Length: 406
Image (tube, rainbow, N blue to C red; front, side):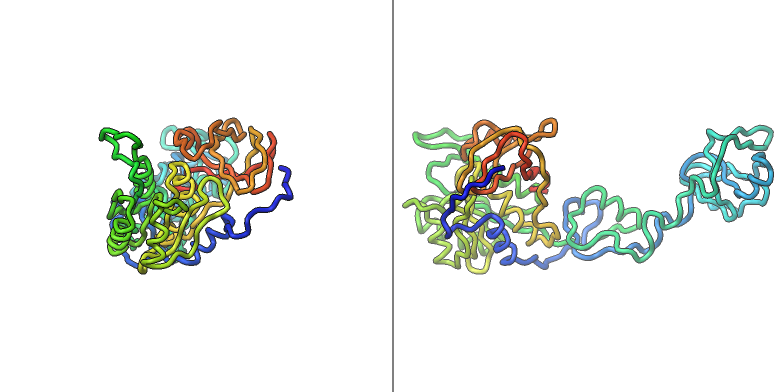
């Protein structure tokens, strides 16, 4: 990349500055639920969880074969009588000295046994087993506590529970967990030009795609949408909708109405009903993003253009939501990949819709803020710093949508 010496307007916040300010200004909500593992998928853990016992609780066999004392193998030349058969779920007696026992995967290793020989290295005949090939003491035994040790923190508070965390909790016998309650979000869209999908368009109207996108994003992040309303473009309707939403939600999220147009009433209404802490960010797309409070309720105002709303949700609203949910990972670290495209320097930090193909980032050809097909085609965003030109092969920061919206 080559960096230009051109400056930019000082009143605009950088993306990093803006996100840091937003995250400092919000706190995790403290409401909790106690839920069973059956319904804990996607919830955020409220307390550290410690292992109550070792997992596995006993030494067990890693495969089907024969368990023996290694010293007996050395003393006999590898031919031993078979004294027992041990299946998973059995509570075996101690292993008789000078013998081997048939054992199956997951079965408890009997007292005295210190080595399991896989069945492929054995041959049993007339009640005796012959060991063929080299073995080492301790082979094929999963040790007690190898996965989890008693008292060890296995999952820390603030982790969003995925199937693998649920499995780990289940492996320790935990059936109920303390989680943060779901974040309650009010979703308001503005713009008299918007029509609901499924209705006929009047002259000059377009369909409201932002509600569908943001509703899906919020639901995928584990939020409950308590209000979803299309607000008329009047100061009175805007104030009424904001106040009603603030009384029902932890977070009010709006689209449109935060720019500088004569019909952009959201910004002024927020300043009147609460406070506006941040407005305008040096980012493309999405410069007119607003953040503050309506009464005491957190407010995030996204731009109205569909791509701008989507990108600023990824960069700013999603981190705010994760912080308010009690999560410990507000924003993912960037990966790095070589650019498969070139573009000139721009005065604002730019987030380009890209797809990772054969190790290179390919750029969607139409990057306009109304081209919603670009975010369907893309699998992430490439970060291009302000005043920076990109040539093919240059390393570029990359954020996958899965990481941004997890």
